Length: 258
Ligand code: SAH
Image (cartoon, rainbow, N blue to C red; front, side):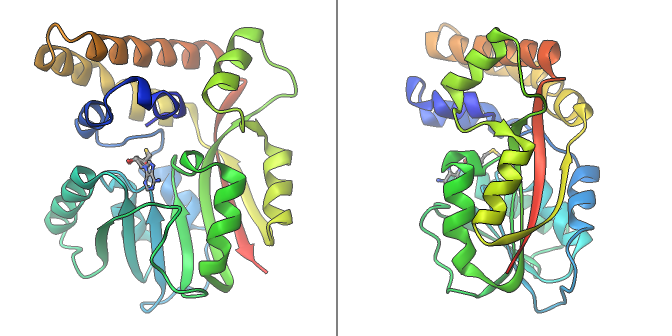
């Protein structure tokens, strides 16, 4: 889900927002190629490695990750229907031995300290804030363990007022790449790699698949004002992305615990 929706989630019914996103393969911008590229920076894992995917949604990237890296992955999401869908997809892919879905919150994780080799999170850390997230998750990693998260970031020092205002309201923690990298170093990680995900991860893999989902959603919630508002908001957000995508996007930040 995009930052704005979640920030404004209290304006809508949480279940309704999740229902909208249940119809989509991904709940945030991304792609299998991007997941594989980020995974290529992770070294030293083996079949006994312990990986978590926080805010995994319906698990599309969890499955790609399991195909790219060895080890066992626990996918965690706060919304149980997403975990149900993920479990079905995992079974269909024959990966039940490699992936376990758990309903839970990313700010109250049930893992032991220094028990994990890799913490993964695509398009989800904003729910608790990037800086807070990388700081509170660090304790669960073994020394030398990796963190890999994607986070919305500014590409330029200055932006047009319209887009600046939208993000100031939606996610004030949005910042430039050097600021986020410095936060990672301050939190006790060696910054290993940083790359902006391609436009196509937003356009082809996120916004375009939404069109048919929006039609079906509006038919299901016919006459429901909140549903109409949700779809209008999605369309407005997509329009802003198409107009201003040279100023912001998702960036993968990969770090190694010192
Ligand atoms: N990683 C997926 C989903 C990103 S959308 C993808 O890239 O497609 C963000 C996800 O975070 C949603 O599935 C939402 O249910 C989940 N989420 C929101 N707050 C959460 C929390 N506190 N703990 C765990 N998951 C949370």
